[in-house]
Every structure is written in structure tokens, then in C-alpha cells.
Amino acid sequence: MKRTAILLSSGLLFTVATGSLAQNATPFTPGAPGINLPSLAPITTPGAVTPGTVPATPDSAATFGNPRVSSQGSVTRVVFDLPTGLTYALTPTFAGLRLDVQGARVQPAISAKLGASVSEYRAGAGQATLITPYPLAPNDGWRASEATLATGKRVLILELGPGISGGAGSSVRGQVRTSAPTSAAAQTVLNALLPGSLPPGDQVRSSVPLPAPSLPDANPAQPSALQGSVPGPARPAPLGTPRIGKSPGQTRVVLDLPPGSSYRITTGPGGLNITLSGVTAAPQQATGVSPELRGWTCAPTAQGATVTLSTAARTTDRSGWRAQLLPPANGDLSRLVLDLSPALADRTPLTASQRTVQAVAPQFAARPTALLALSTSLVKPRVVLDPGHGGKDPGAVGAVIEKQVTLDVALRVRELLSAAGVDVILTRDSDRELHSVKTTDLQLRAAMGTPGTALFVSIHVNALEAAVALRGYGIETWWNPNHARSSALAALLQTQMVQQTGAFDKGLKNSQSLGVLRNSRVPAALVEIGFASHPVDGQNLQDSNYLDRVALGIAQGIREALVNGVTADGASAEPAPTAAKR
Image (spheres, rainbow, N blue to C red):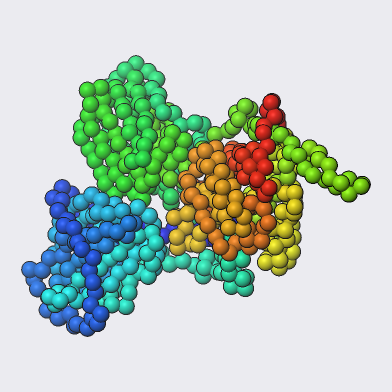
């Protein structure tokens, strides 16, 4: 599909300042005490709020902070009192939204998660910070307003959530700043095309990808080592502070390990635990390191130390991270390198035994005879694969060109299914479109699901526009209620693709308007195999091993549908006794 990409925001950062702060100044007072945040009932903003005039003379004893918080589902509401004379500016940044305030002292505080959409709160040294687990755009992911309560007190109301939009409302008196304006080219939209007739993402005409992560040495084709040891005679040494490297969409943590030491990594929904032996350690910790790394702790143990990396998304043995033990760059300390990103998928090669789809038995089909009677014969089940875009329509253009990747994957899927006894029809087998008018092109593709066709699967690459590009990564599958079994087909495809790739699971999406699905007369689904606009997911899409895994997932999902009756006629095909090899 089609959209664009450039680096922007990932949370809300509030800066309360009495003067200007350096770009890299510490945004809070280290060691400041935490605050006890009381529960806040939803505020009912008065129907008519009369904008008051902020007095020119501030109260020298005024303080800012101690927010009141409430949550409902994924939406977190944070309310700050606005003392008389206080002025502020809101700035969405990569790490959060800054509230620069003059005329009040910020109460120092550090607090953990405030709600589903606020993973951390910090305040002090003229700055307060609300960090969110997802990127923010200038007008997306947050909303701000002011209100005057019955007591006459003025408050700033912030609502945070992935479904929130609007940014700063008209009642906000503070200044609103934009941290990373997007280019005009990145915002070009296909206004001439009919809305609702195109798959998601196709409305973006051009795509400006984020730069690929510039973190060297790691080899994605090598499996992440869950445990290992450093060569050489044991020489216990103090464990230094983890070294951090940051790139768009990815964070690297490096632990320097002495000879004779060893490590063991365990994964989970909260991140990674690294158990080290052969080292000594002192308690250490850091929070709010990056969008991918919420924080880390180091705790000494009898054998060495335990390092915990708290990540923004769950990790599994195959996804969300990558680790390798690299030789010393200088001296004798080896480097345990851990790359963190929710977009990191399995890019290791498939083995020969994995490059197999179990055979699908032929099905009985009724055919008219010369005497107009019906006879039955065995035929291969027929499936239509639709490589999205083609010809003058490139689709998403970012880290990859969509039309090229979708055809590449479709050909791999055809090879797997053909070897398994499936009759595969491609809507295109070369770089061409079916019609110069997009809506007609989509109708022609959908119409290839003629009677006798069991399934229709359209293959696409996703993308997001520049302002929100870092939000988009992973695999999702779309379906339309064109057929009673379309949702079941989509679920099988999504499950198998995620299982084979380890990619981030964006789940199933229901569309009432996608023409290529809506106009199909057989069970149909549209798979989005990754985001061309994301710096890490874009590297997945450039990797042949990843595309092999995607193709295997699609082929396995189609096979599961065929043998379980998730087809146009509901007939199931039992597998043949032996598996076909390709």
C-alpha cells in the first residue's frame, strides 16, 4: 500500500521553565521523590467557559505539578492546576510533550505508569514530562483544553490515547510548538482517487522513508543467542554502565563482558532479563531512555548481576529484539549487543524442511457431460493471488517499492502452493496494471474470483505518512463481509504469517469499503506484510529471508483454509498421505 515516512514524536513532554533549557539538559531532578497521584473523576467542563485574563503579575510562591489522573480504557486524562500568572508552551517531541511554563516552580517528582497511555511522569528542574508508549503527531494521539472550574480555578486538561486526535483546542492559551515539521512532498495525497475504493495506505502518493538504523555489526541472519559465554580464563570484573545507541525506531544496549563470563536471556511481555555470571556489579538504573527502552536496572546477585530491560512492546524468543556476542573492539572486553525494536522480526533463513507446504488433496467437481448430465472429476483447488499495484502504479515507495515486493512474494507463494497440489492464478505475473483507472483495475482483480475459485488473497505493503511513520510496523490482515467465510480466512492468514515471521501482530481489520475485497464473490482477504515507511520494518521487507517467511505464512494460511472448508463452497480437502517438497 502507500504512504510516507519521516521522524517525529513519540509521547508528551511538558516543560515548565523559568528560563531557557539546553537541548540536552536533564529534564528532571535526579533522585527527586515520587508523588502520590490521587484518582480523578472525569471533569465536566462547564458549558460556557469565559476566557479570563491572566494577570501580568505572577504569584512568586506558585507551584506547578501534582497532576490529577483518571483512565478509561486506553484513554488517560491528566489535569494540572494553572496558577495565576503562569504561562506555558506545549511541544510534541520524540520523547514526549513539553510544557514550558513561566511564572511557577515545578514540583520535583518521578512516578511510574499513570495509565494505559502514560507510561511515566517526571517533573523538576523546570520541566514536567508525560511519556507515552506510542509516538505523537502534532494533532494526533493527544488533546489539550483549558477550563474554569466552579471554584474559579483554571485547569489544563490533557487526554492521551492512540485513538485521540485534535491536539491543542481553541481554549488553550499556551503556545503550541511543532518539533519536526513535515515536507510538502511527504504530505502529497491522491485526491483524484475515489476514497474508500483503495486499500489502506494507497491514498499517499509519495513516501519519504526514515533513515535505516545506523547500528553496525549485528547480523540479522544469525539467530539471537539466548545464552552464551565469553572465551578465555575467568577474570571477574565490574560491570560498567550499559552503553546506549539510538536510531529512529530502534535502540541498542551494549554490555561489556570480561573473559570467562556468561549470560542467559529470557523474554517476556515486559522486556528482557539478562542473567550474568563472572561479573561484579553495583545497583544502577535509568528510566525514559528511548521510545523502545522505557528503562533498565542492574542488580547484583551472588553469581554476578541481573540486567532488566523494560521495553515498550512485548518480546518473544524470535521478535522485538536481537542479540549477538561480538569480539572486543578494544582491550579484552567482549560486547553483548542487544538491539530493541517492536518491528524486529525473524530474518533467519528457512531450513530445507521448513520450505514445505503439506499437499492438498484434489477435490471433486461437477462437470456437464455431452449428454447434459453431470459427472464428477477430481480437480485441484483453485486460488487467486493478487500482487497489489503494478505498472505505472508503484504502490508505497519507501524502503521498498510495493509493486515489486508484492509480486516477489506472490511468486514465492505460488511456488509453494503449486508444489502442494493447488492451482494458483495470479492477477498479474509481471510489472503491469490491469487497467489505467484505479477503481476499474481493482474491480478486474476482484472479478478473477470466478465460479470454481476457492479463495482470493490480495498481497500489499503498508505505509504511514511522515508525521506518524514510527507508529507503523508489523503485519495485519483485512477482510470484508463480502462472504461469510472471509473473516475466517483472514484469521488463518494472520495467524500463520505472524507464526512464521515473528513480526509484530497488528491483528485483523474489518473494512466495509475495500473494492478489491468487496467486489469479490469468494472468501477474500488482504494481507499487509509490513511497513515500507518504518526504518526497521523497511529492512525486514528488503530481506529475502523475511519474504520467504511471509510467503510460507501466506501459503500455510491458504492451505489451512482449503483443508478446513474455509472456501467458496465450504468443501474441505483432506491432505494427501505424503507431503510435497519444492
